[in-house]
Image (cartoon, rainbow, N blue to C red; front, side, top):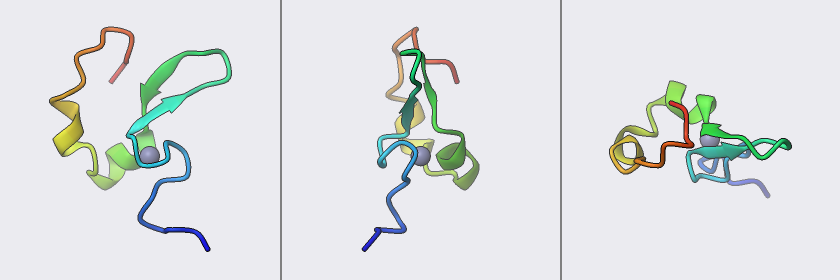
Length: 49
Ligand SMILES: [Zn+2]
């Protein structure tokens, strides 16, 4: 069973970690507007929005 509400790319965290260790906002969640509440909390300069 897969929880459809939980993004499989970022596991619901809103942040995707690539194989090369780069980190970025989950585009899927961004499109869906899930990151509204998270975006304000993202202050890490390593995270590209
Ligand atoms: Zn996501």
